[in-house]
Image (cartoon, rainbow, N blue to C red):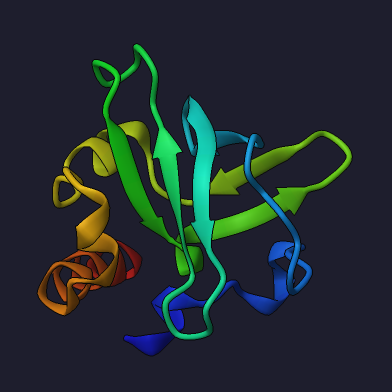
Length: 115
């Protein structure tokens, strides 16, 4: 499951690249923008502010779910659909970004989408 917490080689992500502020697109439409990102190897993820799309909530998306980064257009594309992202384990507080149980649950969820 470790690869779900790292950007794929073909994603277009460049190590150390700042993605904060980039628009985030699901397979079927825009979901929001990158509010924060974690760059630590083995824990890379994005916290995405969904604005009004999901009633102003944020969602945590593992880096392995990112399929494309376009620095010129400032967009990040993820392979999951909007409904799949809505169904992911709920992100409520920043402390969850270091909670191993929560991260394991999120990781397992996104890995199951690949199967």
